[in-house]
Image 1 (cartoon, helix red, strand yellow):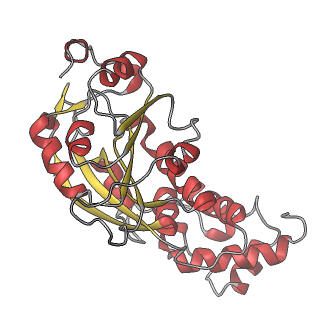
Image 2 (image 1 turned 60 degrees about the vertical axis):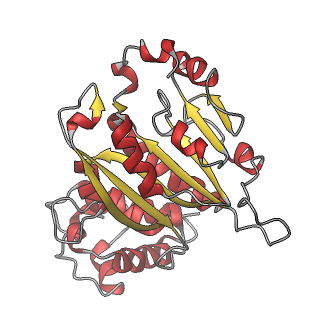
Length: 287
C-alpha cells in the first residue's frame, strides 16, 4: 500500500471506514469477476477492493471524492484502473464506462468474446447509501447500463432492502429497489471488518438489475405515489393520498385496493396498479 494512503486519517465528512484486507478478499470472492466484466467502483478509498479486483484483469472505473486518496491510489494501481476524482452523485460515469473495453479470457484467441457486463461495487458511506442507491436505479432506468451491484451497506439498510410487505422495514427504498431488480444479502460484516470500526454491523448485498418487475405508465408519478403513501405510514391510504389525487377513496376503489389499508401492506404490483389508476385520473394534468 502507498505510504501516503496508509497515513491517511479517515474523514468523518466522507463517512470513511476502510475495509480490512482479509474481508476484502471475501467480498471479491462474492463479486466473482469474470471475463467480459467492467467494474464501476464507488469510493475505492485505500484500494482494498480495487487492487484484488484489478489483479483479475478486469477494467475498473473508480470514482473517489477524497482527492488525497485519489492521488495516493493513482500512484500504485495498474493500467486497467481508471480513477476519477468526483462525487458519484454528480459525476456522469456513463461515457467513461462506454469507453472501457472488457477483458477477454486468456487462451481464447479466435473465440467469441464473452458478453460485456458492467458491474457496480463499493463500500458505501452510511450517510449517502440511500441517495447512491437511487442514483444507480436512475442511471439504470435511463441507460440500462448495469448488470448488477455488489455493495457494502449498513445492516439496517440491508434489512430495508430485503423487507416484505407488512413489516416495519418495508418502505420507499424497498419498493424502489424492487422495481430496479432482485436483491439478495450475501454476507454480514462485523464492525471489526473496518478501520475505524463503525458502531453497527454492515451487510454485503447484491442487486441484480433487470426489466421492471411491473408495468408502470408513468415512472415519475409512481415515485410520487409511493412517497405520498409512505409519508404517513400510520394513516390509511385514503388519507395519505389526499394531497396527490382528488377523491382518493374512489381512485383506490378503481385500483381494487381497500381505501382503509395502509401503505406498508401494499405489494409492488398493487402500487403499480394504483399508480396507473392515478395516471388516468390526473391525465393530462400529470404530464
